[in-house]
Image (cartoon, rainbow, N blue to C red; front, side):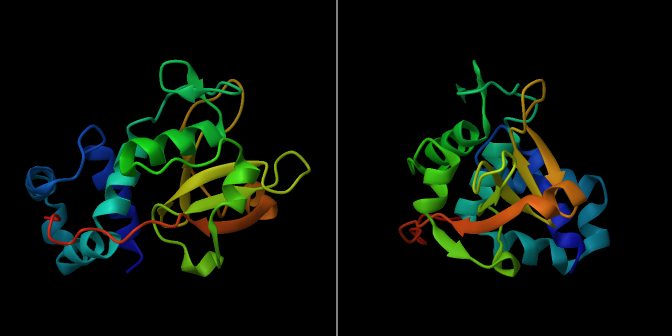
Length: 187
């Protein structure tokens, strides 16, 4: 079961420029099948995709589409660059139409507290990187990894929360409250 979050990262990276709709899943399935990955993973692939859900999948795929965008303090667009909270805000607004507050600490206050062991792709992870609580935010993508815009001179990237730097600065996890998905419109 440890392989499915890594597979989610792979599928998100492969489909980073299209929202995962029925055709996108078919294209993604075909590509993974052509490369022999579906055969090797068997039922784990379908279970992982089903468990993630349409909304979380779309959110993670959209976030991966910003990989490489440069960091910019106060930035909130791909054209100008992102800071951490500007990145999270842009992804949620673009992917699911949810407008979050602008600052990381405000995002923490406006979302539901969850335990670290409850993290699912699309949840927010917060860190104390400036000697104050909730000074940094990213989006959890699965397998202990998160995507974020880290600091000046860097760019949007995926990192492992289990690295000592992030482990010692972890502040908490949050879930963005969302209305129920319209199941009749999904796949």
